[in-house]
Length: 340
Image 1 (cartoon, one colour):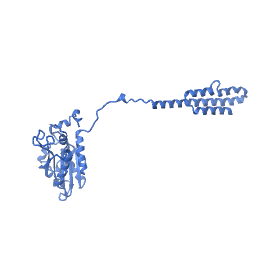
Image 2: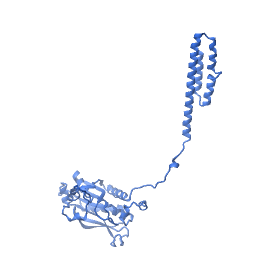
Image 3: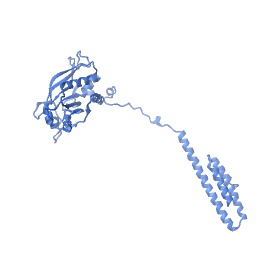
Image 4: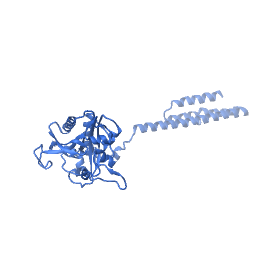
């Protein structure tokens, strides 16, 4: 019995350090073959009593079965290890077989222009807010000092939603009212977004276009601050060499109001088709917030002053990148868009 245990222990110890299937087979032959050590033990059974034969025979068979199981487990272990090594060292790169070359995407020129303009205002201390594309008549017109019968409404042909008191905003100025209703001064914010007007599309007009609205409200805000802010903005966007001028104008929600012209960036002020020979281009409207607008949002116009301005993004994009037809911005012609 002791010899059976010794031989089995010897076989299992040898098996621990085996690393090939061939060596496993050699151990199997050494212990379980016709002349194997465990097989030889069976030959000694004839010299034992009947009772000893039963006990010893059972012990030998148990040793054979245990060794066989360990031999099979070792084979599986070696096979798995070899597979792992093979997978590790023989990786197949299938990417060339499935590689496609796609053109590199980038932001649309309108998005680029909005981000560039917004970043300039952010550097000047402005926050960025979002407005609603669907508005009520109150926010889009009346709170901005444009009553229902005012002719200014005719210049902004409006898309009204059917069976509703809602409309598509005609100007980002509507966002001013929401912001002033929600917070008290000081306010320094821009509101970029799409606006909608029912008009025919041509080289300089579109039914859908983009604006950036600016609003500053506080105590003792002056027109000089408005001029300084917009002058700095224009120079950062186009360069310090660009001249600009403020012309008196009229907007229902600002008083006094002004329009800002810049020297034509295409002809340098000499006169061309884009500036209609004048050498100047109108780029934005601005002014001091009208007291009636403050009253609509329950601000005290005796205490607070402020200024507002509105920029047409498409116009600035066209000037900055030398585009003379607004329609190319929306036609999705990849030959045009990939230039920017």
